[in-house]
Length: 385
Image 1 (tube, helix red, strand yellow):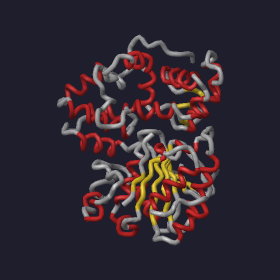
Image 2: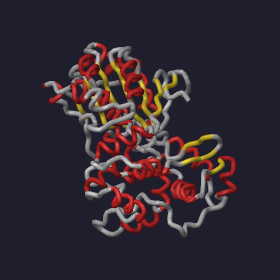
Image 3: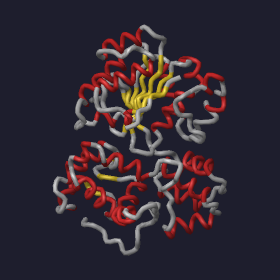
Image 4: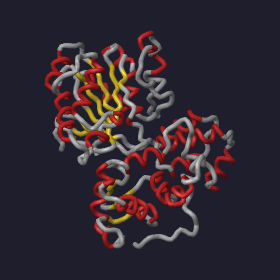
């Protein structure tokens, strides 16, 4: 079983310097990502810029934080390790330059060229820009300038730049690394590292129904632990669908992950069509033929364009001519109307985000993981040592 986390970094890095880190800690339980981590370590040795992309909840940020806390990275870059949350930035080059200069401890630059000169005159650093899709959405003002700024910073030989994104953004010179779902073994290890239940075929079946989606697995395990369920209780809760399985008080929920994408300018531009498209595909009895979208959903105007945009943000994906949705997202949209109505009542936790479809549900009508750089096209936080 491929494992990353305590055995590959966190448990070996209890130095005084690491104790002073002001960016988030590495995840305590993190499995099945050694291959990606090894690729990132190789790129950091050059250094060369990279983008991790995947749907929400796939573990992009967890991988980036594990990298920052990795022993090799701690030794190589020391205190020059920076983590910036892009969703806390304003959509402007000026704000991005300000955050980057603050991270590096430089005077505020007048442009990206001056910022790069500051980095070139300083020790080599590693910089994570987490969630760049929030500032380079094509409909965000200044997105083109921001993308160019990130590209130029990636060219700087003194900066090892790692970006995470829900969009498969093609920045020239950046290695693109797709974060896929966990293996069965890694999914099982993730679940059982969060709760004390013993391994079983019944639990494995639930993990499979979750498409081995990391965030959903962690939330399921947390719910089991918080409610002190034994295995029969967990299986019954899953079957009945009467619990808040994907809503945990101390974690990001699946709802948070999905709704933040639906609030992006590109998706908002479709109005109600985007959500209607997702609900229609979620309620379809199987995967949908991409070539038949207009025929299958004639009541949704612009469904083909909406699907293209939703695929770009990883809420949908295409495989063998079929439009598909990972199981946790499908389950969410199958029950969205009822969930939205429940959410109108104050202090009520959203429940039944994950359960088998109701029996009376009416159906609607009928790689290489790492690609080369040239393969294709509020509250603010700045974390530093």
